[in-house]
Length: 341
Ligand code: TXA
Ligand code: MG
Image 1 (tube, rainbow, N blue to C red):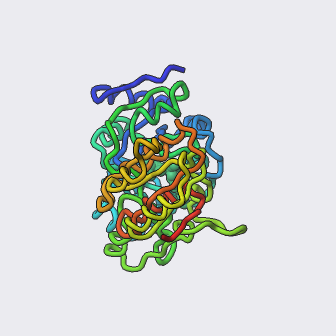
Image 2 (image 1 turned 135 degrees about the vertical axis):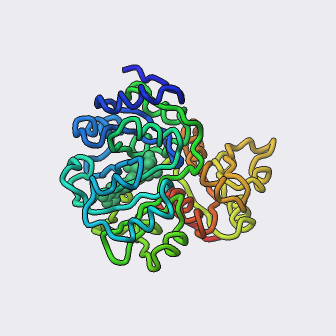
Image 3 (image 1 turned 120 degrees about the horizontal axis):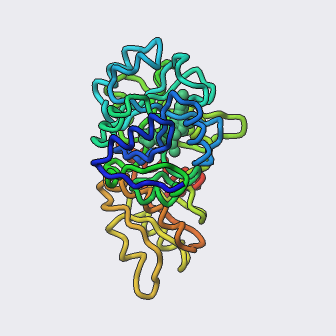
């Protein structure tokens, strides 16, 4: 299959492919998604095949406006409308009780469904034109870092999907925040573009699923099935170093081998790369700019797959704001191998 590369002007064509049961790479503000008509079980099955995704990992449905919630969800709590009012369209997914119209293959048989109303202008235009809810996981091969450019997505999906709509680089760079509203208190299942602080400001108490911050033990089950898989993992083993930026940089400088790869803040690139040590160093952006770090994190992890570094060391921001999402992605890439400097 040849994957068509579509530009802004070809939204109607992309919408048509979706309506007819095809697969389209869609830009969103978080990461690129692999979209199909969420009401067509056969089309949704193709998503799992193209990604090599385990069947027990449910997909989220993307909708153009909050009005569509009632079509696919039931017993919607007021909290859902309050969150939608504050954060939709935007990088937040709500887990709600589902209606029977949602095919089992979308929810992996769960009684709940993840719902998201994205903000990216091209994505919104596509959802409106398609006039169906679009089931879309991140557009990477299962286990690889999520794609934040059309080029990344083509690396994984060229020849496996019908088309990709190029909407430029993603402005958030990490996947949406997932909040489960079917339990009390509401529970953060995955940190993302909307921060825990923002959720608590809107809802009061919010629990944090243990899978967000640590490796689960045998027999423990995360509420978001996808959180149990090793993820975003480059081929080389990753060690995450936390603590104040100067301390983590100094720790890595002492321990990293001459050939090792480094993920670090702007201020420290020169410390790690010099003429004597031509290491692969991926720059996350300034230590104080977590928004930029979020935009670059997946690109940094992906870049190492084109190298032969024996190991990777990563500086990590603190957990405040979107730092929680960045730390979560780095920690998952590292299999929660974390050192406190
Ligand atoms: O930003 C995003 O959310 C992107 C873009 C494309 O919208 N999508 C995305 O989808 O990250 P995916 O499939 O890569 O991650 C969705 C996560 C998975 O960990 C899955 O297990 C979880 O959401 N999930 C989906 N439905 C769920 C449900 N009903 N209950 C609990 N977790 C659910
Ligand atoms: Mg994913």
